[in-house]
Image 1 (cartoon, helix red, strand yellow):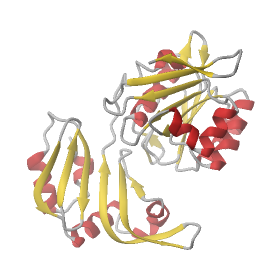
Image 2 (cartoon, rainbow, N blue to C red):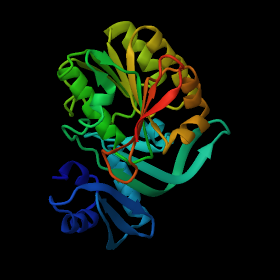
Image 3 (tube, rainbow, N blue to C red):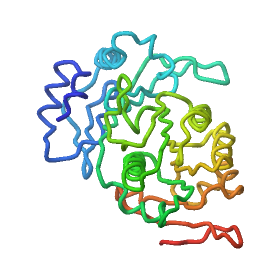
Length: 301
């Protein structure tokens, strides 16, 4: 079941993982930390394995992740993660080398976190009524803390808008997690009316898609940079609806983020959907933009 992940580990780690992973539980994370035991995170529990990880284990794993060419993955490593076939994201920790403005390298790698990606058909069923109303798609921001399932939901939103509402969708998949493209083919079901731009910065990719693919809806994951503001404004002013995600727990978190606050102040989003940070896939609150006074009102608590 997890063959595409297990191939990145050496024999002693792989054997220990096989002893502790079954098809009965949903595996979400595999954490490797230097001189510490492996920790498996399942949907409802964690399992600390009796196998301590060495520096050599981490280096061997990283080399396999990078197809034995760490240098060619330098850009991704500097972002703090590597995305591999299947859309799985591997977080990286270690000693950061920078020039004061940007990360140049991460060396002395001390930890790897395998976040297991999976497609769940129907994951967006509960949020879709707030995003699509009759013939209309609302500009929507989906908010939750990390690892709360928003990318899984976003992936299914794309599929449903493409196949069920029959709209042309453009996905700017900067981290390669939504569609899980591999050699030009999406490994996840994105719907028959969806175009994907993989491994491209959102601020650039959104403009490219609008100019070249004529989308009705544009989708991107984890917005939050200043460059995103202009691209999202460009999209909405072009008559394209947008569905995006961001990190946060509540409305106060969003308003403290200067980039997201700017978008809220400009009344770009018609719906703000906060996911439950304890139960994946569940909605916590929904705010809608009141057309008359241009204020956000609680639609679902």
